Image (cartoon, rainbow, N blue to C red; front, side, top):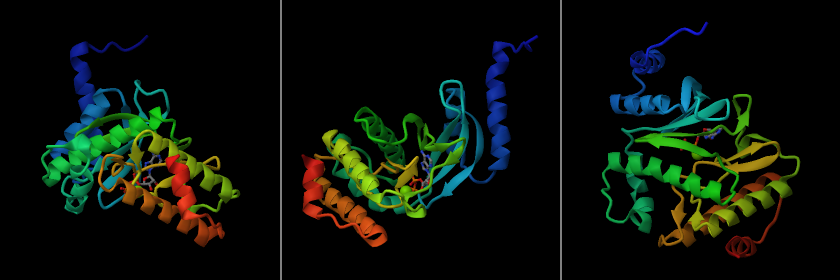
Amino acid sequence: MARRVSKRKMPDRDDFRVKEQWKIEEGVFDRKTMMNIEKVFTHGIVSRMIHIISKGKEADVYLAEAGEKVSEMYAVLKIFNQENTSFKRRTEYVKGDPRFDGIKADVKSIIRIWCRKEYGNLKIAEEAQVSAPKPYYFRGNVLAMQLIGDDGVPAPILKNIGLEDPEKVLDEIVENMKRLYSANLVHGDMSEYNVLIKDGMPFLIDIGQGVSLGHPKANEFLERDVTNILYYFKKRYGIERNHEKVVSQIKS
Ligand SMILES: Nc1ncnc2c1ncn2[C@@H]1O[C@H](COP(=O)(O)OP(=O)(O)O)[C@@H](O)[C@H]1O
Ligand SMILES: [Mg+2]
């Protein structure tokens, strides 16, 4: 027989679950971040934090068990570091973007906007059928998205894997950049670090700095994205592609 839990008790249970997790991560999250994580739990997006996948300068990425609102087994939480001052230089990505006109530009606000921006950009990517993680939810500085990986094991980044068919992967990356561009977005931080390889196919991640084509530097960022990707494929796999051709392919 199922154990009866009164409705009044339910939030406490969720609260307890989060607090238990908190013990593991004590000292890692500030109060505000903790409250945001709690919302991800109470919204049924995540039911358990499993372990950290990546500790970055600006954000930490965690593997989590998905909650009842998510049809997959796992989810990924990207938690932006509220205290991070390196975000200051990122204000230019937000300030020039017409979508963010008239927005406050202190570091804490920028981080929240950043998180929302990554969520929004992932949504656009999803609609444009770009291979990228599906966004589930965001709250403040916490973003929940699909795990790109198998059975709870995150897929490797492009840099850490030897490709069997690099020409095909490069074609796919360019095709995904083209779809993004058609949806009015430029990734802005394309490199061998921000592409995951699953089943021999690329997935674009870390899309928070993506800018819309109305941004004054959109073109410059696109050029740089193409330069970075072509440089990597040339250096590692000896593949030569004409920069201008690839750019016009993306824009066509
Ligand atoms: N959706 C995801 N699925 C699997 N692994 C991910 C996912 N998102 C991020 N990662 C892992 O976390 C690392 C850091 O994430 P990323 O979004 O690139 O943040 P940053 O580079 O700002 O630290 C990635 O290199 C990747 O290994
Ligand atoms: Mg990254």
